[in-house]
Image 1 (cartoon, rainbow, N blue to C red):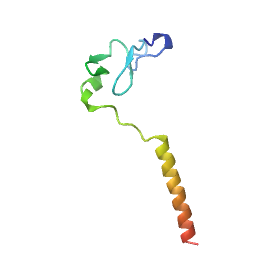
Image 2: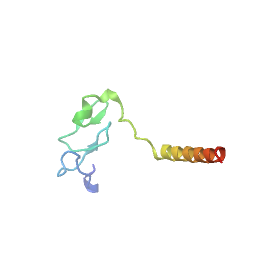
Image 3: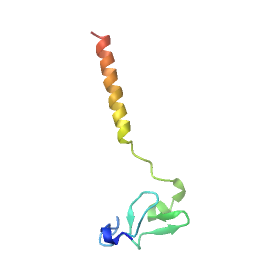
Image 4: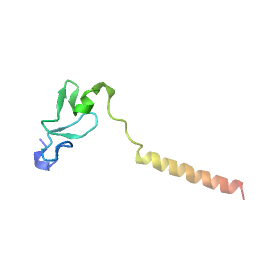
Length: 82
């Protein structure tokens, strides 16, 4: 499937990837893929497929929001302590 794009297995860089882990998203070759009724998994994720998707990292917008809040607070403190 991904041979033409050059995607390689996360665990075997010399092998072409055929699919991705449904939980962690790592590229997998035919030696690494564990096929379950709920999807394709790497060996590590196949042990706990019911755990759901890997937790997402804080998004860019969350950091922008934190920056805006800090900026507003800094203006408030400047106005209060003049």
